Image (tube, rainbow, N blue to C red; front, top):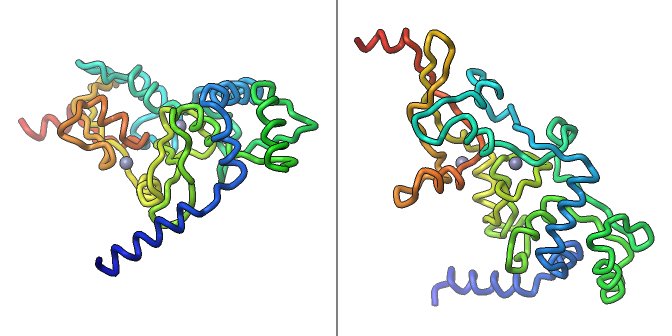
Length: 246
Ligand SMILES: [Zn+2]
Ligand SMILES: [Zn+2]
């Protein structure tokens, strides 16, 4: 066996032994249905909204222009609005510099959906209070299997935000991916939309290129866009540009 393979086996054995943090243990203690109900409770109580992160739109395209895009396919403004929209509070969209958390204590358990599980978990694990990242609660609600150990180690699993937006709880924007993939999404330019803007200012999508994370010839455009980062880069074509080619 090569030294590299031996090293890899040792690393895997180590990571197996590595203990889950209490917050991740609690998430796996919950059923996905309970985690989903808890996410919905947080969304309601903290007044989450469907909002687009306009930092991920280019100067050529405002949110209103995005919503008004026309297309001969179903990839029009309605499609891209839904594709981009995060489930987030306006405050988090503006200011969050890290993943927002939720604290729970047995005495002040305002989270009706998981109160019983929490008391049971605390008793079994001698725990008094817990702080959990909100996006991981949403992720647990989405995954059928228990969450793997999430860590910042090289090659470790993390929860990626396809929208690269701290605070978003939209499950379509959350994925379990390696740390390396997660990092590369942060520096991704996103998809490329070629848009024809006529003299009346009407925008039509004339071509779409998924981002490097979504590109896959074997898959449909919808699947490729689903795997792409929620950022848009625009190549704008106007009548003036068309004239050049005549
Ligand atoms: Zn999002
Ligand atoms: Zn990407």
